[in-house]
Length: 257
DNA sequence: ATGGTTGTTGGACAA
Image (cartoon, rainbow, N blue to C red; front, top):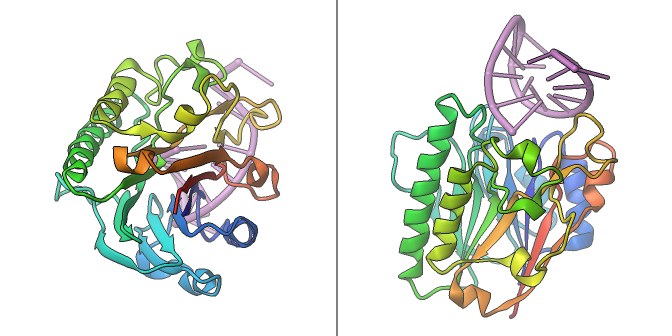
Protein backbone atom coordinates (compact mmCIF):
# COMPACT_ATOMS: atom_id res chain seq x y z
CA UNK A 1 0.00 0.00 0.00
CA UNK A 2 1.43 3.33 -1.12
CA UNK A 3 0.39 6.42 0.90
CA UNK A 4 1.40 10.00 0.03
CA UNK A 5 1.14 13.11 2.21
CA UNK A 6 1.34 16.59 0.72
CA UNK A 7 0.61 20.08 2.02
CA UNK A 8 -0.58 21.59 -1.26
CA UNK A 9 -1.13 25.20 -0.06
CA UNK A 10 -4.53 25.61 -1.79
CA UNK A 11 -5.93 22.66 -3.74
CA UNK A 12 -7.42 25.02 -6.32
CA UNK A 13 -4.19 26.90 -7.01
CA UNK A 14 -2.32 23.58 -7.12
CA UNK A 15 -4.82 21.45 -9.05
CA UNK A 16 -2.84 20.92 -12.29
CA UNK A 17 0.40 20.16 -10.38
CA UNK A 18 -1.31 17.77 -7.99
CA UNK A 19 -3.24 15.88 -10.66
CA UNK A 20 -0.13 15.46 -12.81
CA UNK A 21 1.92 14.16 -9.87
CA UNK A 22 -0.80 11.72 -8.83
CA UNK A 23 -0.96 10.42 -12.37
CA UNK A 24 2.72 9.46 -12.31
CA UNK A 25 3.24 8.53 -8.63
CA UNK A 26 -0.08 6.66 -8.46
CA UNK A 27 -0.43 6.31 -4.66
CA UNK A 28 -3.30 4.22 -3.27
CA UNK A 29 -4.05 6.79 -0.56
CA UNK A 30 -3.40 10.55 -0.62
CA UNK A 31 -3.33 12.81 2.46
CA UNK A 32 -3.68 16.50 1.63
CA UNK A 33 -3.30 19.51 3.92
CA UNK A 34 -4.03 23.22 3.52
CA UNK A 35 -6.68 22.68 0.87
CA UNK A 36 -7.84 26.23 1.74
CA UNK A 37 -11.44 25.77 0.59
CA UNK A 38 -14.76 24.85 2.08
CA UNK A 39 -15.68 21.17 2.05
CA UNK A 40 -18.31 21.59 -0.68
CA UNK A 41 -15.87 23.54 -2.89
CA UNK A 42 -13.27 20.75 -3.00
CA UNK A 43 -12.68 19.77 -6.66
CA UNK A 44 -13.80 16.18 -6.09
CA UNK A 45 -14.63 15.29 -9.70
CA UNK A 46 -11.07 15.82 -10.86
CA UNK A 47 -9.76 13.36 -8.26
CA UNK A 48 -12.58 10.90 -8.84
CA UNK A 49 -11.61 10.72 -12.50
CA UNK A 50 -8.19 9.45 -11.32
CA UNK A 51 -10.00 6.73 -9.38
CA UNK A 52 -10.04 8.26 -5.90
CA UNK A 53 -12.83 8.42 -3.36
CA UNK A 54 -12.73 11.89 -1.81
CA UNK A 55 -13.20 12.75 1.87
CA UNK A 56 -12.46 16.45 2.40
CA UNK A 57 -12.80 18.48 5.60
CA UNK A 58 -12.51 22.15 4.76
CA UNK A 59 -13.32 25.68 5.89
CA UNK A 60 -13.23 29.11 4.33
CA UNK A 61 -9.79 30.57 3.48
CA UNK A 62 -7.53 28.58 5.79
CA UNK A 63 -6.50 25.07 6.81
CA UNK A 64 -8.47 22.09 5.47
CA UNK A 65 -7.43 18.46 4.98
CA UNK A 66 -8.46 15.57 2.73
CA UNK A 67 -8.19 11.79 2.59
CA UNK A 68 -8.29 10.34 -0.92
CA UNK A 69 -8.37 6.58 -1.48
CA UNK A 70 -8.70 4.18 -4.39
CA UNK A 71 -10.22 1.63 -2.00
CA UNK A 72 -13.30 2.24 0.14
CA UNK A 73 -12.92 4.27 3.34
CA UNK A 74 -14.74 3.11 6.47
CA UNK A 75 -15.49 4.73 9.84
CA UNK A 76 -14.61 8.28 8.88
CA UNK A 77 -13.64 10.70 11.68
CA UNK A 78 -13.62 14.38 10.72
CA UNK A 79 -12.17 16.07 13.79
CA UNK A 80 -9.49 15.41 16.36
CA UNK A 81 -11.23 14.48 19.63
CA UNK A 82 -10.80 16.46 22.83
CA UNK A 83 -12.01 20.00 22.02
CA UNK A 84 -15.53 20.20 20.57
CA UNK A 85 -15.26 24.01 20.42
CA UNK A 86 -12.26 23.86 18.04
CA UNK A 87 -13.64 24.76 14.59
CA UNK A 88 -10.35 24.58 12.65
CA UNK A 89 -10.37 21.95 9.88
CA UNK A 90 -7.16 20.10 10.62
CA UNK A 91 -7.95 16.38 10.89
CA UNK A 92 -9.56 13.53 8.98
CA UNK A 93 -9.15 9.82 9.67
CA UNK A 94 -10.55 6.64 8.18
CA UNK A 95 -9.91 2.93 7.67
CA UNK A 96 -8.58 1.72 4.31
CA UNK A 97 -7.99 -2.01 3.77
CA UNK A 98 -7.82 -2.55 7.52
CA UNK A 99 -5.33 0.29 8.14
CA UNK A 100 -6.37 3.29 10.25
CA UNK A 101 -5.04 6.35 8.37
CA UNK A 102 -5.14 10.06 9.31
CA UNK A 103 -4.38 13.24 7.40
CA UNK A 104 -3.44 15.95 9.90
CA UNK A 105 -2.43 19.60 9.74
CA UNK A 106 -0.86 20.50 13.07
CA UNK A 107 -1.01 24.21 13.95
CA UNK A 108 2.06 26.29 13.04
CA UNK A 109 2.17 28.08 16.40
CA UNK A 110 3.98 31.27 15.37
CA UNK A 111 4.39 33.90 16.66
CA UNK A 112 5.34 32.19 19.92
CA UNK A 113 4.28 35.09 22.17
CA UNK A 114 0.64 34.89 21.03
CA UNK A 115 -2.33 32.57 21.65
CA UNK A 116 -1.19 30.59 18.60
CA UNK A 117 1.58 28.78 20.46
CA UNK A 118 -0.47 27.44 23.40
CA UNK A 119 -3.11 26.39 20.84
CA UNK A 120 -0.43 24.36 19.05
CA UNK A 121 0.69 22.71 22.30
CA UNK A 122 -2.89 21.88 23.31
CA UNK A 123 -3.50 20.42 19.84
CA UNK A 124 -0.41 18.24 20.27
CA UNK A 125 -1.73 17.03 23.64
CA UNK A 126 -4.99 16.04 21.94
CA UNK A 127 -3.07 14.28 19.17
CA UNK A 128 -0.97 12.38 21.73
CA UNK A 129 -4.08 11.29 23.64
CA UNK A 130 -5.85 10.16 20.48
CA UNK A 131 -2.75 8.42 19.14
CA UNK A 132 -2.63 6.51 22.42
CA UNK A 133 -6.28 5.52 22.13
CA UNK A 134 -5.67 4.24 18.59
CA UNK A 135 -3.02 1.83 19.89
CA UNK A 136 -5.73 0.03 21.84
CA UNK A 137 -7.32 -1.08 18.57
CA UNK A 138 -5.92 -4.03 16.65
CA UNK A 139 -5.48 -2.18 13.35
CA UNK A 140 -2.17 -0.75 12.13
CA UNK A 141 -2.18 3.08 12.45
CA UNK A 142 -0.61 5.61 10.05
CA UNK A 143 -0.69 9.28 11.13
CA UNK A 144 0.53 11.37 8.20
CA UNK A 145 0.62 15.07 7.46
CA UNK A 146 2.14 18.48 8.08
CA UNK A 147 3.22 18.30 11.71
CA UNK A 148 4.87 21.75 11.73
CA UNK A 149 7.54 20.09 13.89
CA UNK A 150 11.27 19.97 13.13
CA UNK A 151 12.22 16.83 15.06
CA UNK A 152 15.99 17.39 15.35
CA UNK A 153 18.95 19.60 14.38
CA UNK A 154 19.52 17.58 11.20
CA UNK A 155 16.03 18.44 9.97
CA UNK A 156 16.66 22.19 9.47
CA UNK A 157 19.28 24.10 7.48
CA UNK A 158 20.10 26.45 10.40
CA UNK A 159 19.27 24.91 13.81
CA UNK A 160 20.64 27.85 15.82
CA UNK A 161 18.59 30.36 13.86
CA UNK A 162 15.39 28.35 14.37
CA UNK A 163 15.82 27.48 18.05
CA UNK A 164 13.05 29.80 19.30
CA UNK A 165 10.66 29.17 16.42
CA UNK A 166 7.36 27.40 17.23
CA UNK A 167 8.37 24.57 14.87
CA UNK A 168 11.60 23.84 16.73
CA UNK A 169 11.35 25.06 20.35
CA UNK A 170 12.14 22.58 23.08
CA UNK A 171 8.49 22.26 24.20
CA UNK A 172 7.41 21.48 20.65
CA UNK A 173 10.04 18.79 20.18
CA UNK A 174 9.26 17.28 23.60
CA UNK A 175 5.55 17.01 22.74
CA UNK A 176 6.47 15.26 19.50
CA UNK A 177 8.71 12.90 21.48
CA UNK A 178 5.77 12.13 23.77
CA UNK A 179 3.89 10.67 20.81
CA UNK A 180 6.89 8.60 19.76
CA UNK A 181 7.23 7.40 23.37
CA UNK A 182 3.77 5.82 23.10
CA UNK A 183 5.32 3.39 20.62
CA UNK A 184 5.09 5.26 17.31
CA UNK A 185 7.87 5.19 14.72
CA UNK A 186 8.74 8.23 12.57
CA UNK A 187 9.05 6.39 9.28
CA UNK A 188 11.47 8.56 7.32
CA UNK A 189 14.13 8.89 10.03
CA UNK A 190 13.83 5.20 10.95
CA UNK A 191 14.78 4.27 7.39
CA UNK A 192 17.28 7.08 6.73
CA UNK A 193 19.20 7.71 9.96
CA UNK A 194 21.67 10.55 9.58
CA UNK A 195 20.61 11.52 6.06
CA UNK A 196 21.17 15.29 5.75
CA UNK A 197 19.25 17.89 3.71
CA UNK A 198 16.20 15.63 3.55
CA UNK A 199 13.71 18.47 3.65
CA UNK A 200 10.00 18.55 2.83
CA UNK A 201 9.40 22.34 2.96
CA UNK A 202 11.21 25.36 1.55
CA UNK A 203 9.87 28.89 2.12
CA UNK A 204 8.83 30.91 -0.94
CA UNK A 205 10.99 33.80 0.29
CA UNK A 206 14.69 34.64 0.09
CA UNK A 207 15.56 31.96 -2.46
CA UNK A 208 15.08 29.19 0.09
CA UNK A 209 14.47 26.52 -2.56
CA UNK A 210 17.45 27.21 -4.86
CA UNK A 211 19.67 27.54 -1.77
CA UNK A 212 18.22 24.34 -0.23
CA UNK A 213 17.33 26.19 2.96
CA UNK A 214 14.62 23.75 3.97
CA UNK A 215 12.86 22.06 6.88
CA UNK A 216 11.62 18.51 7.35
CA UNK A 217 8.19 18.97 8.91
CA UNK A 218 5.95 16.52 6.98
CA UNK A 219 5.95 13.13 8.66
CA UNK A 220 4.45 9.66 8.91
CA UNK A 221 4.05 8.20 12.40
CA UNK A 222 3.45 4.45 12.47
CA UNK A 223 2.05 2.24 15.22
CA UNK A 224 4.05 -0.93 15.94
CA UNK A 225 1.78 -3.01 13.70
CA UNK A 226 2.24 -0.51 10.85
CA UNK A 227 6.00 -0.24 11.45
CA UNK A 228 6.23 -4.02 11.06
CA UNK A 229 5.01 -3.51 7.51
CA UNK A 230 7.25 -0.53 6.68
CA UNK A 231 8.96 -0.96 3.30
CA UNK A 232 10.00 2.56 2.25
CA UNK A 233 9.54 6.25 2.97
CA UNK A 234 10.84 8.80 0.47
CA UNK A 235 10.63 12.53 -0.15
CA UNK A 236 9.91 13.44 -3.77
CA UNK A 237 11.54 16.84 -4.35
CA UNK A 238 10.29 16.95 -7.94
CA UNK A 239 7.05 18.91 -7.40
CA UNK A 240 8.83 21.67 -5.42
CA UNK A 241 10.83 22.62 -8.51
CA UNK A 242 7.82 23.04 -10.80
CA UNK A 243 6.08 26.24 -11.84
CA UNK A 244 3.37 27.27 -9.36
CA UNK A 245 4.78 24.86 -6.75
CA UNK A 246 3.49 24.42 -3.22
CA UNK A 247 6.09 25.33 -0.58
CA UNK A 248 5.87 21.67 0.55
CA UNK A 249 6.76 18.57 -1.46
CA UNK A 250 5.18 15.09 -1.15
CA UNK A 251 6.41 12.34 1.18
CA UNK A 252 5.57 8.80 0.08
CA UNK A 253 5.23 5.80 2.39
CA UNK A 254 5.03 2.17 1.26
CA UNK A 255 3.66 -0.56 3.52
CA UNK A 256 3.93 -4.27 2.79
CA UNK A 257 0.71 -5.76 1.30
C1' DA B 1 18.74 43.66 5.03
C1' DT B 2 12.75 44.57 10.40
C1' DG B 3 13.44 42.53 3.93
C1' DG B 4 11.66 38.65 0.96
C1' DT B 5 6.81 35.29 -1.50
C1' DT B 6 2.36 33.02 -2.12
C1' DG B 7 -2.74 32.35 -1.40
C1' DT B 8 -7.18 33.93 0.02
C1' DT B 9 -9.42 37.92 -0.65
C1' DG B 10 -10.41 42.24 -1.93
C1' DG B 11 -7.29 44.78 3.60
C1' DA B 12 -5.14 41.97 6.41
C1' DC B 13 -3.76 37.59 7.84
C1' DA B 14 -1.44 33.18 7.66
C1' DA B 15 2.44 30.67 6.53
